[in-house]
Each structure stands twice: as C-alpha cells, then as structure tokens.
Image (cartoon, rainbow, N blue to C red; front, side, top):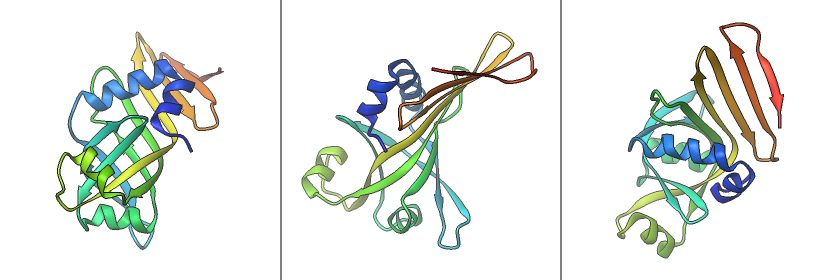
Length: 157
C-alpha cells in the first residue's frame, strides 16, 4: 500500500494527471463491497490532506459501513475527454477528532477514511491509440497501448 505522496514520488507524471482528473469535478463514483460480497456504487468527494488522499461520508452511511467492514474500494473519477482515472486500495478509518476537524473544516459527525493505494490507472486516447497507464504500490509502472484497435502493446517501465 502507498499513500498519495508515495504514489506521486514513484510516478510523478501519472499522479499529476490522475489528480487533475479527480480535481476536475467534485463528485466521483466509489465502489465498495456489501456484506454479501456484491458491489455497491455511491457518489463521493475526495480531499488531499498533506501526503494523504481522504474520503468522507455522512456518519453511518451504507458506504461507510461497507468500508468499516471491508476497506477494499475502487474509485472512478468523473470521466472526461482528458482521460479516465481510477484508483483502488484499502480505506482506513480516521478516528482522531483533531485530524477529522482539520480535513472536514468543522466538527460535524462523519466517517472519514484515509485511502491507501494499491493501484492507479489513467486511460486516454492519443490520436488513434488507446493508452492505459498503470501504477502499482510496488512501484511498477506499465503502459498499455492499443493502436487503431489492434493488438495491445505492453511497455513496462
């Protein structure tokens, strides 16, 4: 797992592009796991707090209960013409009230989560080539290219 700063250090260009996608719109789509293992998707906003990427929720919302039970998540930034960004990892509840207030800006009851990253992917189109750039927490950076809907070319960096 890695925090946002570690991702930014390991893959600065990709992290900058992924962050731009998340900052382009306020709300995104969060996927969590229900008690029976089936997926649940919910709208969510994210905040950057120092080295961390954070996500908040109304206190005791279904998505918060999902994350408290099983922290695995996938987060899809609002798509746009500049690229399609996704991250996944494990959400860890923040329980320190001072940290919650610093991120939230007030003391309203909420659930706040630190998003620990396993993977980030940015998919875009360059000319007639579909490009997917993938980073993993072990530092691997892989680029997949599919020119003119042909075979995929894998470039490991």
